[in-house]
Amino acid sequence: ISERIYPVGRLDYLSEGLLLLTNDGEFANQVIHPSSGVEKVYEVKVFGIVNENLLKKLQQGVHLEEGFAKPLSVRVLKHLPSKTWLEFRLAEGRNREVRRMCEANGLTVDKLKRVAIGSLSIDGLAPGRFELYTKKQLLKKLGFDESGRVLSTSKYRSPKRSVNMRKKSLKPGTAADDEVFQIFRRDRYFETLKALKEKEIEQKQQRPRRRD
Image 1 (cartoon, rainbow, N blue to C red):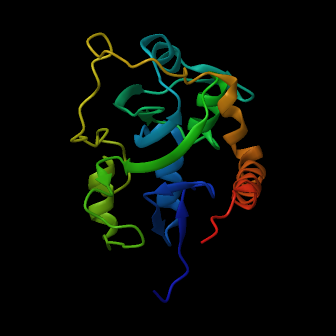
Image 2: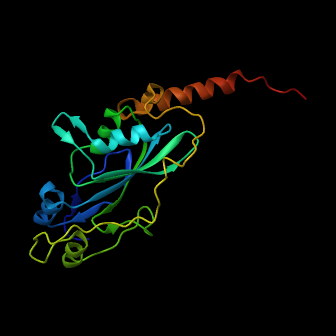
Image 3: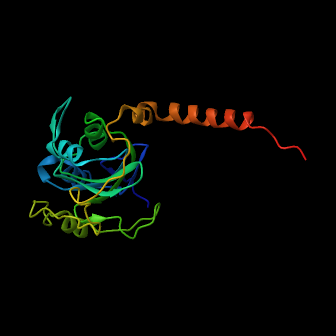
């Protein structure tokens, strides 16, 4: 692409998923600004088991440094033996908002993936691949008319069903808000990985070797 392009919004180093790139600054501001109401959908894997009580806390919102932040919705997509997949829907674009909302409720994020902006999604698109759209096509997918006025909020319809928290029988495990998982947070992530790697090497060196 010969022209200079830049991302609409951002994803931090430990995140992945949909990035919208454009050379139109006015269009980028329309999408990012909270007044547009454009929905951003994230799938988030957190350490531990999220129960019904924790889910309600996430849905109620939290007080961040710059003010109160509340997601449009939060639901549980899947329970793993020691982790939980969640879906967050937001209409704002605050820095690291999903991670900070999780951390404010004692949860630690393992993986974060943005799957949709408006009705534009990465379904069927492999990592590192891209698709080209005209401005007219993008405006339609994001709920604007051709002049940039908000007509409706285009929403992404996820094929994944919610876990029924009341009927689901959870195996005993560590709760997602347990402090033990905080060593995997962003500010300590690489330090923790290094320590775990060193421990693994040390354990291998201490293993007795078999003699023939």
